[in-house]
Length: 326
Image (cartoon, rainbow, N blue to C red; front, side):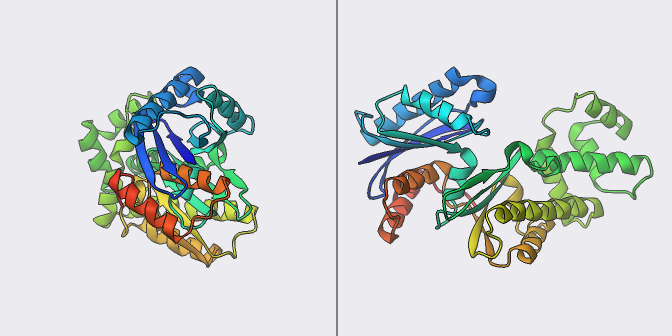
């Protein structure tokens, strides 16, 4: 039995093959895509490129009879997974194809159990929950705009800077940090360029917010603490949907904004989530999301992911560079 996992997001497309023992045989890469923004033709082309590279890596000649699980960016509304499945089935004579949002495979890649929650926080963000009955909920477009990753954090920092400049708030280190990084002479220039949409890639400044907090800045602390509390509330809302608040489960965190274990973001997230879901445990993602797709595919074929399969996944994921950097 051959299993194919696919992970497609805006930054990359990955494909990986494994056998029914959980041994990952090969992996392939291609550029990222989303059918929503790039069109279905481009999205499928990128998937095909990644599969072809994975076939070479795994020495697999035929795709006939292969079971596929794909986590895909843009699988947001109820009609989209089936549309994507239909297009994937046109690529080869697969046995079966199942598409979920890419957050769901990232969740499965981070937890030992087939259920739990995930909070993703990179440039943007997402949050998703899977119940023990395999019911999924992905916040997607219902995700709080103030909790959308580095973009949201740096925007909050800019709003604080503007409020300080207009004497609504006390001084913050963020003002000089942002002026220096963006090479503006004063806040007026920064504010005008920001609202005229001339400040590009503002999310790249998020390390400055964490740096300012480390140096005792009140504004940076407030921004990160509020993000942590809001994230805890978001996760709790997802768990409440499936009556999971009292369950023992893992909440996977994945993304650059969770790298600093000493930030008030993570400390507040841990504390507030503990108040709402006392048995929930926050863990870092262990594997790249494509491994989660493989695990879901194995389970879809009725294969129990026992200790032997887990060890095979671990060993081969390490060899193929599919372990996440914590």
